[in-house]
Length: 563
Ligand SMILES: NC(=O)c1ccc[n+]([C@@H]2O[C@H](COP(=O)([O-])OP(=O)(O)OC[C@H]3O[C@@H](n4cnc5c(N)ncnc54)[C@H](O)[C@@H]3O)[C@@H](O)[C@H]2O)c1
Ligand SMILES: Nc1ncnc2c1ncn2[C@@H]1O[C@H](COP(=O)(O)OP(=O)(O)OP(=O)(O)O)[C@@H](O)[C@H]1O
Image (cartoon, rainbow, N blue to C red; front, side, top):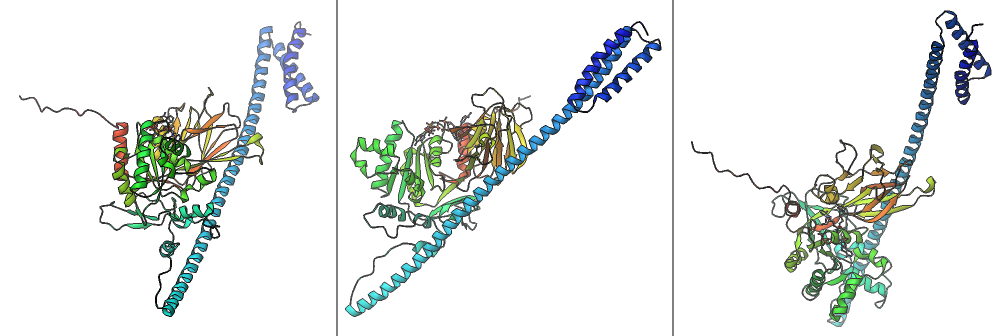
């Protein structure tokens, strides 16, 4: 027995013990395997000693090396296993998010289909009533003729314009305003007065031409109505013209709050619209109250008192007028969750990027717009849907919809962590936003928050969705512009460190928790904004005058020095 036998067996105990533990954890070995290993190690150690190489130091090094190598290989195995599990978890999360997304998309299609069916039903009912009216009319004419023939005189029957325009033109914006169920209303009932208001809504059509108003090229009608509401079913990047078929009869004025000059202008405009233009004027509830408090003359003003009335506002209003800045335009757009009547925005704010009309020339401007034809910019909006995933339960999903004219932004709010936003475009993974957040903007919003975050300025008629990161923590994360038809999904990963916050046109902040998703696509309901001059001229003027774009003193040229 060598003198250091004792030392040898003690030194062997520790590494084998460690190995034993690891093997047990992995359930790969059993007792006999460990015994075999011990014998092997003992023999190898003994052999090296007996070969005369061994010293106490050599033995220690030998055992340290073999232990480290063993541990390394098990750690590698362990980390491989962890990676496989992580990959599987990610695939499950992705497929779940995809399913949620697809469900939302189907729901959206279903809702559109329901709307379409309702409109078709309305159309059919409308045609039937027109035919009935015509039958009755011809019958009464025949009756009258008979009467006059029999009595030798008489007068014409009362004329109801109901549906004549629609029967003549096919689809026009009159159709949407006739709510079902009015047929039996008595003249005293509220329904009847609503109906009177509704059926007085003006009719118009849109057209686009390649060279604008003065162009010689033929202008084509754009059938972009769905029962009279402007949709983006047919989008055109050409200049669009709005032509009234009958003059506008009802106007809704929206004003910036807490401004004396705006309130004064509103009062003046209301008088002019009533006395000179003879139109019905709607204002917000609080505005009517303030005006009436000052002067009882304003008692004739109409205001929507109930939410249900607000939801049907588009069926009563021919023209929306805003007095304020861009915020008032956003406010007006937000009031219409579906179709939006043509909008005329007067500049009474500081920047006024989307407010082309000068308020001191309001009579002249409104005269032109109400007479038509007038150029309009179809400002596209984004439809945003928050899908909540409470406790990750499949059935426990809450949904919430928003329509934005500028943008939806997702930021880190009060959290000091970087955002971790997984972004998908039509279910294709795009990127993970690590930074302060992300802006999904319309071309109209490209000159607002997105611009401040480094996004491009885009003409409002260019169809697309801007994908602009906010302070990304990566040198190569540049903004993108995606085509208008895509559906974007921003997913808060389950393992996200912090929460995120979504804002819609800078308002209605909503917290997004891990597992929640935001789905964004182009809405079918744009804001038809009247142009002062023409869409491109208005845009370039705003860029130059509002933002002082590329303002620089020209270099001087005094000519070459004379030799
Ligand atoms: N860092 C930023 O630039 C920043 C930060 C937050 C919000 N915003 C913008 O403010 C908007 C909300 O506007 P608000 O008036 O209710 O808030 P606000 O009163 O804070 O005004 C924001 C400013 O943005 C301007 N603005 C708004 N929409 C614009 C557009 N489409 N093009 C050019 N400028 C525009 C307004 O004229 C105003 O000067 C949000 O939709 C967002 O785009 C910008
Ligand atoms: N009718 C309204 N009711 C309540 N709030 C409104 C209304 N119209 C506008 N606002 C809000 O008032 C704020 C200021 O409005 P707006 O941006 O039009 O004026 P401004 O700040 O003077 O103009 P600018 O944006 O050009 O600087 C905005 O936050 C907007 O959301």
